[in-house]
Image 1: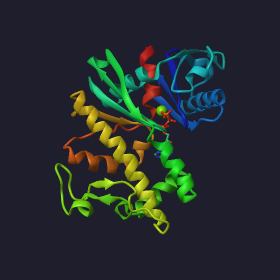
Image 2 (image 1 turned 90 degrees about the vertical axis):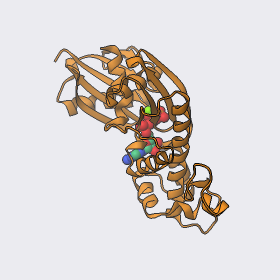
Image 3 (image 1 turned 60 degrees about the horizontal axis):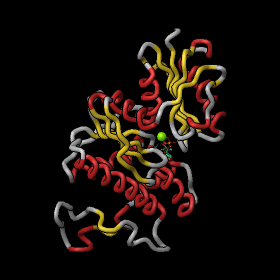
Length: 275
Ligand SMILES: Nc1ncnc2c1ncn2[C@@H]1O[C@H](COP(=O)(O)OP(=O)(O)OP(=O)(O)O)[C@@H](O)[C@H]1O
Ligand SMILES: [Mg+2]
């Protein structure tokens, strides 16, 4: 019992927590990030409930994510250790994938790319994009009047992105270079006031998957990590996003690792960094 450590990741949208005992994850939880410290306390209480443990059993809390800087040195009187999010992401990505090195892409509200080499001995932030889950929710709220991710995904599944996006075939009559005819030449080029809402949802998903997919491919080539891509964060848990990214990767003959529980990557890595 005395070895219980809780990892908390306070992200822009969700606060995730894991309970780890003797190197085993015994509980997961995810709550909305609203008030930072209240969300962290809620996640802590809920993960203890999920793990069937009490506050007194916790030895330490490893806290990371954008909101971590606003948490003091204790949470419910338990000692808190703040962990840099890049470090946590790198260590978590290696842990979840079982790889000694990887390009880890955190697909959350925004998107961050981190390389982890030498079994975590070298971890570096190499870039990212503001395109992620936040733009899916924001554009859908405005363009579709819907904000719940699952509902937007349902619409995207019913829609056809190529009714909104201009394809390579439409532009030049066939394939070009490495691109097949159905690749996107211009996202949203065909959008107009009459476009079906399901098609708009499909195009939003397509754009987000393509932006993240393409920068991932470029980064992986730059760092020679083509065989070691690990995709984590909540939005890659979406079947639609994962399918779109895998299809895009096929053009570049690249395979990706999408570990289960990838949305807990930072929380897991934070614990890993202090044990
Ligand atoms: N059921 C779902 N499946 C996939 N994605 C979802 C689902 N519900 C919400 N999302 C998306 O997940 C995003 C949040 O992902 P995640 O929890 O990984 O990010 P975060 O850690 O809060 O953000 P960041 O890492 O950028 O600070 C939201 O922006 C939302 O669009
Ligand atoms: Mg995050």
